[in-house]
Structures are given as structure tokens and as C-alpha cells.
Image 1 (cartoon, one colour):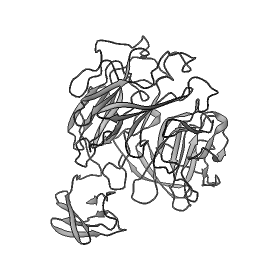
Image 2: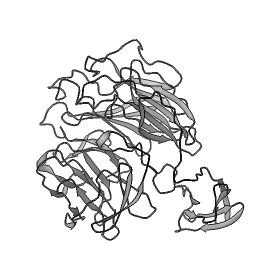
Image 3: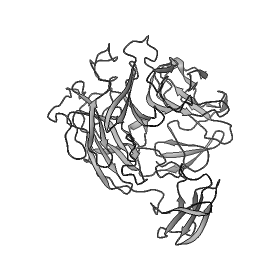
Image 4: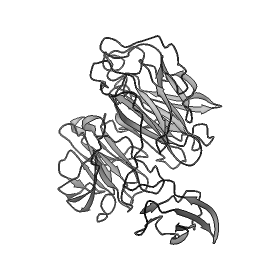
Length: 488
């Protein structure tokens, strides 16, 4: 039996952990040792107990929370209908017991990309415990279109009461987890092509434990008139492309940030929870003016980090960054991109970096200083560079490794120098096997870089599927169990 446990942020730096099987001490973990153990003589029927000690005194005792005879946990789900599949997930502790619950978005089989016409069935959001107990279901209703760009969930303890809440976009006809209808449930605003380009748009705060709607406000950036002169098209593609994230804009409290638009007009709004109510903090909006710095400089994704070490987080939209006060921090002017990776990618230099690929051919790939937007190095492209990855995936090279769909078959180092001519998939990354390097996640397979130009398969999730067609997106990757490795 493989066992792992949490070393929490509030645990003593010199905490000692003692692991017992059937009341027999089998392992002691002291400072600097692994918080995991392979018990070769254990079995699923074994009873495990973990003691945490400080200066020789037991300060807490925990029993094993989850066990399985396989390398996975089966979490039973209740499908809204036969044409539904699990899609995006978030996690949050809805009851304050220290264990995450799962917020799951259900997508119907007729969900659509924004560029495609077609009416869709309703979108649902469920909340489950890790053992499969369904806590509630929210029906977003007929005025929220189904598709990967429309519904973005923000889950955090927004009111700092020790329990997580959900914030997401809603509309007339949304039904909360207690059965209460938001707005006018009799209205339907979908046009003949299935797009929803009229009617009120809301942002709703839901109680994590019950799915009850606690507060609803108008969406901070309304769609307004949908036209080529306001969003770049008149049929509903660009106006309804949303991103979201959790950001600690004051360094203490979590805010929900929502991006709307990124190909042309770029907007971002920040919303807090104050006294149990949603409160708009600020809105950033370039308007539809290509001469405005930041215009068109958004990605299909958004990331958050404190790049200037002021204790407050900034939001990185792609080729632009928004400061904690809602002002434009910087832009490279390199326009829209499909992927980016942010972190302390170059340990030898101060601060954090962003590795980003660009859709406009001439911009290719860039390594950017996250603090000020200065380009550290750049490789030109000749057409859309649709994928890229960067992180420390190989212990044999100092710093990080960088690769993208262009230049093809080219692995780069921190200086932008080529170090290899064979690259792995460039979709997602995951901390999987407990060492200091990240592994490569693509679709349902995890690979590891073992030497230059050499990769080995660690896991293939036979019988599983990923989401969103060629995007091959997992429902979630995160350290859900809290053992310093990520789950998939």
C-alpha cells in the first residue's frame, strides 16, 4: 500500500510524522524526509494512523481518509441525462472539514464552440464529496449556451468563513441548488442560430454547501451591442469568450476575476464578496480601439501571480498584464495567443517569467519578464504557433526547458539555445511522481523526460477520456489530496 499525507503550511517546520499500521509503528518522517511511504506488507484492510509531533509531543492524530485497491478512486456521478459528459471541475472545501469537494460542470453532447451555430441543451453544475455524495445541482437554464468558452467557475472562500463558495455567470431561468429560480424563468433569448445575444446577464454567488443563491448582480461587463464595431463580429463569437481566475488583489482576500473577449476588445472585471454580497472592485476595458495598448492581447487562458513582490497578485491575460488595481501593467503588443506558462522558470534571474506562443505568425514564441513585460528572448514564427510548454521537466539541464509547435522539434534552454531535437507533447504539465521535475500530460497519458530527446510513458489511463475534442483537456489537475503531488 502506498500512503501519502499532508505537511500543512501551518505545521511546524520541524514537525515529525509517525505512521502506524494496525497500531504498529512502521515509519517515522522527520524534517527533510518524504511525507509518503510504500508499505510492502500492507493491504486494503489494514488500519493506518498518522501522528504529528512537535518537540516529541503529539499535537494531532489522523486516520486514513481514503483507500483503494487500485491507483485511482472511483467517484460515482449522477448524470443529468444520457447525452451529458463531465467537463470542467474546480475544488473547494464547502463544509470546513479540511477536505475538498468537487464542483463539476456537465456539458451536453450538442455543446458548441462560439464560432459554430446551433442550439444547445442546458448546462448543469454539481457538487460532490470525494466519495461521490451529490450535495446539490444548479441548472444554469436555457439562457446560458453550452460550450467550453461560456461557463467559467470561480470557487474560493470568498467571505473568509472557512467554507468555499461558487461564483459563476447566470441568466434568467437559472435554478439554484435549492430549486429557486433566478430572474424570469419564462424567458428564452436564444436566436435561430442558438446564440444568446440579448437578455440580462448576471453573476451569482452560490453557497458551497447547499448551492443556494446568496446574491446576484448584473455581469460587470455587459455584452451591449454585438457588432463588428464593438466586438469584432456581429454573430456572437468574440463577445462570449470568457476566462476566469481567483486573485488576491489586496494580498488577503480572494477576488473573482472574469475576462470577456480577447481577440479584439479585451476586458477584465474583479468582484469581491463583502458582507455576504457581491461587490464590483474594478473593470478594465480597452474598448474597440486597436490603438489602445492591450487591445487584442488576450489569450484563451489567464494566469495569476505576484510578479512584483508587493504581496498583491496581478492577472496575466497573455501578451498583457493587469495590475491589482485594474490598470494595465504592461503589454508586449504581440496580440492573441493560445497558450502560456508562468512561474520562476529561470531560477538564475530575479522574478518570474512567462513563456507564451502567439497566433499571429511573425510573433512565434517569447520568454517575457512577468514584472514589466520586457522580452527576454524571442523566436520568430512563420504562422500560428498554436501550442507551447515550459517548465523544469529534466534534471539534467539547469532551469527550465521550452518547446512549442514552432520551431518544430526544438527543445530550448533558459537562454533560448537549442538543447534537443525531439520534444514531447505540449498540452499540459503535472507533478506526478514525487520528484522535483514536472511530467508531461497529454490527453490520458503522462510521460517523463528521462534524458535529452528521450521520454518514457508513466501512465496511460485506459478506459478514460479527456474533454473538448482535440484540446484534450482534463476535468482538473490539482493537488486535491494535499500530498505535494497532483491528481488527475
